[in-house]
Image (cartoon, rainbow, N blue to C red; front, side, top):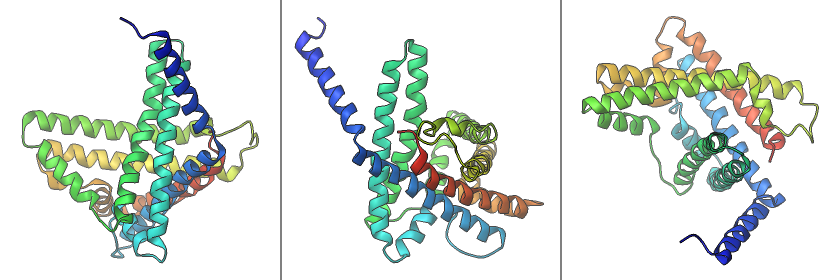
Amino acid sequence: MGPSSDEHDGAEAVEEAAETAVEQPGFHVVARGGFLMSGIVHVLIGWIALHIALGIPGSSADRSGAMAMIAQAPGGQVLLWAGGTAMIALALWLVLRAWFGARRRTTKTAAAGEAARWLGKAVAYAALSVTVLRFAAGGSSSTSSQTESLTAGLLGTGTGRALALLLAAVVIGIGIGYAVIGLTRRFLNQLDRSKHPSIGIVLRATGIVGYTAKGLALVAVGALLGWAGLSSDPQKSTGLDGALHTMAGLPAGKVMLLVIGGGLIIFGVYCFLRSRYQDM
């Protein structure tokens, strides 16, 4: 037996209410704060990466290192609470956009692609919000240690090693995707061109350089994860921090690290600008 007319009308009413709520200016203001927090995190990771390239000791060049730096700064806890809340709002907005965007597609393939596109971003921001709020509450965690522990669990069996290699390929693929988005300027498609028909050169330049640099960083992470899978050594997979430290020890690695670190800072600047120009 299918749903009754009343149930169908009720579901439509809930959906319309959700769509109305997510379109409220106040909700957009909070959600845009998620891009600002993401920008701060990338700027700090890039700054730490520059320190690694120059041989200056400091925090881990990953999300946990960036969160620790914010938490230790004056007013850092307040910023973390505000940023974590904004990222939750942004993740919710992305989930609803995935739902409503898929509903408007005329074919199942197009609907699935639309949903996957936005849900992937929602998961990324939701995961980052968990890290931010954990530090806001006074907790801490090491992204590198978590990555190594996860990899150790996978490398215990042949199936696990295959999954680790698959995960490495996915991360490398995502990294290549970021670089392609930057080099082809596809990031401009996510900006509101109707209200801002003339996108400035600063926004274009930070997007091109930032997306490309983040893509290179993710490719490095994926390569280390793949190396760990091939050698069955989880200590070789320590996330972004481990990838950047490994890069620093390679020939011309410090130069590459300076480029990536500077690029991540530029990507953070792009996130600041995106908070205003994002099509919502």
